[in-house]
Amino acid sequence: MQLRAGMQIESVISPARVIVIRAPKDDVEVCSGGKAMVTAENIPGAGASTSADDDSGPMLGKRYAHEALGLEFLCTRAGAGELTVNGEPLILKEPKPLPSSD
Amino acid sequence: MNLMLLLEMAASNDPDRTAIGTSDNSVTYRDLYRRAGVGALYLGEHGYETVAFLGANSSAFAIAVFAAAWAGIPISPVNYRLASDQILSLLDRDGRVLVIADHELAPSASASRHDVITADQWLELTGDGAQREAWASDPDQIAVLLSTSGTTSKPKTAILRHRHLVSYVLGAVELGSADPADAVAVSVPPYHVAGIANLLTNIFAGRRIVYLDTFTPAAWLDTVRAERVTHAMVVPTMLARIVDALDGKPGDVPSLRTLSYGGSRIAATTILQALKLFPGTDFVNAYGLTETSSTIAVLSPEDHRAALLGGDEAARARLASAGRLVPGVQAQVRAADGTPMPAGEAGELWLRGEQVSGEYLAMESPLDENGWFPTRDRAYFDAEQYLFIEGRIDDTIIRGGENIAPAEIEEVLMQHPAVGDVAVVGVPDEEWGQTIAAFVVPREGARIDEDELRSFVRGRLRTSKTPDRIIESDRLPYTDSGKVIRRLLTL
Image (tube, rainbow over all chains, first blue to last red; front, side, top):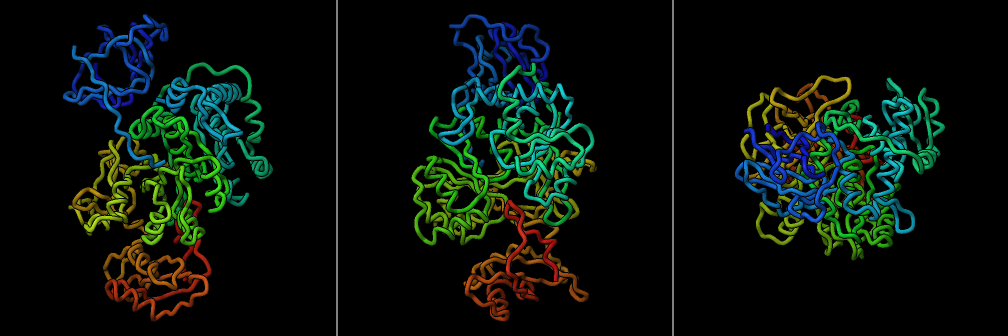
């Protein structure tokens, strides 16, 4: 799928949801637990949760990246299912907070 | 993308944490979220198209911001310190508007043709009831309408869409990154972009917000001590008043880890004194505009320390800079004809990025074809990408063909012991085009000697930058955010 910054995508197997922070130029295949993720608006029955003790999925508020592709997600809802892009797992990004200016 | 995404994430992350309030009167994240949903249902059912908020910062304001976002309508914080006829003209808009006003301001708002409720009534009606269903996620919806400062021309109404503000927050802050004991003292008003940015970033970070409505140095110091405030944001005039009030005594605020300042230029003497009076506090200088969803450049605590300790002249000079760009923002410095300027040379600052709006109500977009926004600020970058803001382009004095930034002359005059405050402006002149006038407020008990001040400037700058006229004034006209209203300074 063609990602763009600000877009939200959802897992079809869990409540997991991410927002795109940085998007690669080219189309990519984004999966959660091996199933293609979809644009958040289009999912009926969102919120239905699956295996609660599966901690392979994204955690709320954490950032996941694929540096070579220039891709970054922020998890806006936790859920099961490892995130992959073009078959490769995303790496949990260490936060680099800016000095608080507000 | 909707501001509600930020609150939903924060409320899911730690629902029982205090979002806003003092230790004995507060709102949790769960309360804030629930009340926003109840308020949104009310706004939708009554067909409101805008919420105008006329009052000081409070949990009522925060609820109104998120309720409007949930309902998919803009919120317009109005400067409640204006005279009632000015308030009425700001409230004069099309469509159905709900005005939420502080108790004492409700009578002046009721002369408008809109529905008016008090902030207390708003708290009461959001206290209990059903919530609206899911919010719209259209990133292009308008989230906030804000008046710009308008120091050189008539104020404009800037448009900030959900995508601008959400991008700013997600680019700058980590969810729940604040310690549970953290608290931030906010003394910028809700109708200033820093007031909006403060609310959103601190909510997302999970940092308790303590509002201080009427700023005085004593009230600010008392609040920081009593509430064990760890973070605070002030405008330079506030910092100058705090430094004056301390009169050389240390700040004695052990809880305060970070003090950020911004909104206008700060005198070098003020920041140097402040660094000495608050030795245990990290200082952050933030630069941004209403049109850029607040901060686009930050001078970090490390930069402040390097300036204080370092023997390096460039490091010391950076104390007068706005620091470096935040991630996601691009900048260009351009000459008047559009040519990009190399490092070290000043021109107009143009900005681009997800958080940059640059749109105004009822005006053509000032963005160029590639989405760059002209800030009307004159600026340059040094060799290490530190941004130096020289002032508004419209304030630049053109004397005999030479461009002169008033700030440079003001900086020098502020170093003179007799000068308490100063603003330099250009005045029309037949021979030179413009000449330089300095409006000087003498320090208490001091006398202004015109010739002495002129030679003081001449000894430090060129003759062409020496004020042609020195005008003694009782006080200078300021906006609440500490900007001199230069259009009021005429001979």
